[in-house]
Amino acid sequence: MNPSPRRAVVPVVLAGATVAAMAAVTAVMVGGFGYIEPASRGRFGIAIGLLWALFALAVVLLRAAPVRAAMVVILAGSVVIGGAAMAGPPNTSTDSARYAWDGIVQNAGISPYAHVPQSDALAGLRTDWLFPEPTSRADGTLHCTQPRTHLVTAEPSGEKLCTAINRAGVPTIYPAGAELFFAGVRLLTGPGAAYWPLQLTGLLMMTGVTVLLLVGLRRRGLDPRWAALWALCPLVASEAVTNSHIDVGGALLALAATFLVSAGRRWRGGILLGAAIAVKLIPILAAPAILRRQPWKVVLGAVATFAVLYIPYVLVSGVAVLGYLPGYLSEEGYDDGSRFVLLTTVLPGPAAIVVAAVLLAVVAVLVVVFTDPSRPWLGQVVMIGATLVIVSPRYPWYALLLIPFVAMSGRWEWMLVPLALGVRVVATPAAVSRVALLIAVVAIVAAAIVRRRSARRGSPPATPVPTRVRT
Image (cartoon, rainbow, N blue to C red):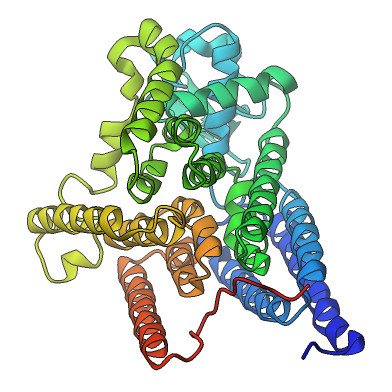
């Protein structure tokens, strides 16, 4: 029996109020806290914890709301919370400064892989907001007073510069698809606009994923209220909008590719998958689950698209298009195994590398073999989520790829993986990350056991994904 109209409106109103509270907290954190520093991690932690609590409450309330009303709240919430995330410049990462710089360099007719940002060859392209003037101390030494900036030495002149670009002494790491996007944004806005252009495009892509989820879930007879897991997630607003990580573009393209392939449009899906991989490489993790039927179409479409996007850069820069990728893998501890925070608890680094590779290969094979090709999202959740747990990156925005497929599958417990990765923003010790990931793994395994036992008894699962929903 459906609830009375009066009772049905209560969760809608409460969910709307919760979303408004999330937007308010987001705006205060982004616009009022400034850039995160060791002394400010405590208040960031409180705000982030509050946002995740409000997020959980909103999801629960929306599960009790009529579907159409819930969809309105979800879409409006995505826009409102995402808009609040534009209340200030990036607050936990300066990656978007490199995005902007790469776009400026390309629009000057120079390959982004040709020079490092502190090279004097690019001195004429330096803008005040990316390279503010250093300030002299009383003893004559120079330092940087503006947040998000640090002191570097220009090459080869030796001049001291302040810059907001991290790793200014190494070439860019970003793939060709991302570089084309950076150039396009700066072509429209010019070099003088600071962080807001990428925040705005991040908001548009975030909202695009929300719309895709609402439509995709609805058309497949699934509950569109699960789209709230993406649309209202604090990590999504923070990393897709405030800090403008290009991973949101990879997630958008990977989700669209999945919908096309699962509907039998494998060539088109492969093309979008190739574009997604050319944006951030890690969307390749979405591939195994969509390779069950006629995989050659998907693979050829993806490889051809990836190659076409890279051709202009390879012609200009050759092997330099690898950028800082090899150095990054070493810097992050993937060459000696130290990055695998769970595996290194019981294994030495070199052994952890081998075990990680074996585990990922086994997961990929199981996903290919057992995934339903018409409903590949659960396989994608397992592949992407397991990789994040095993590889344990210290950057939470990598989890942007996982969240849309969690929403499609309704396996809410996997949201603990983005939450665990996000802990590193406010608590840097590896031990904290290890405990957070371990808790996520235990919860995911426990949920799987409960769901399996419920299915055997013929009772409704703990997290039902109904084929017909109340409107």
